[in-house]
Length: 182
Image 1 (cartoon, rainbow, N blue to C red):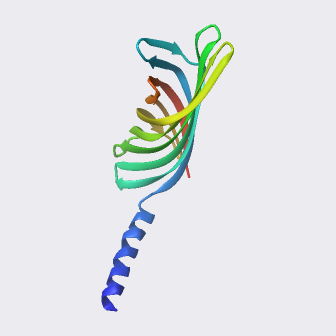
Image 2 (cartoon, one colour):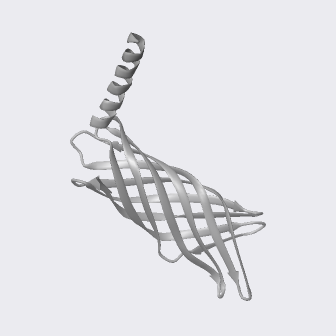
Image 3 (tube, rainbow, N blue to C red):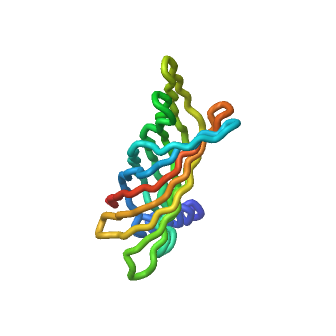
């Protein structure tokens, strides 16, 4: 009985530390500026996308006084990439991300990495034909920004990739966004 009490006390102390360490929920949105979509099969073609956006929500765990680890769900819309008149690709994706965020004492600047995996949906349109598919995708990114009271404002870069049959698809570009910390 005493052993169980000690274990329970230890577990409650661990969780109480986490609760007071500054952990929080957050939500945010980014504009995807200048995304480039690249398709590779036997040849490679690149095209700029229309304006895209990302929305996400997650929970941030304080790992050390200067490092937080965010775990989040994200939806991305890449915008449309038109390769030639009438031939286009439209896509979106859902990700589960890990976002380590680094800060310095007495400084409101931050940097973060983004690593995620999920599913990318693509729709190709050719005059008279269209097709869509969903495949596994991964993403990696980096972000720098400034923290106000409960609001972070940042600029970043994302690279996402997926394989659709024999075609390798990558979407990469700059993001500008805002995140609210509850």
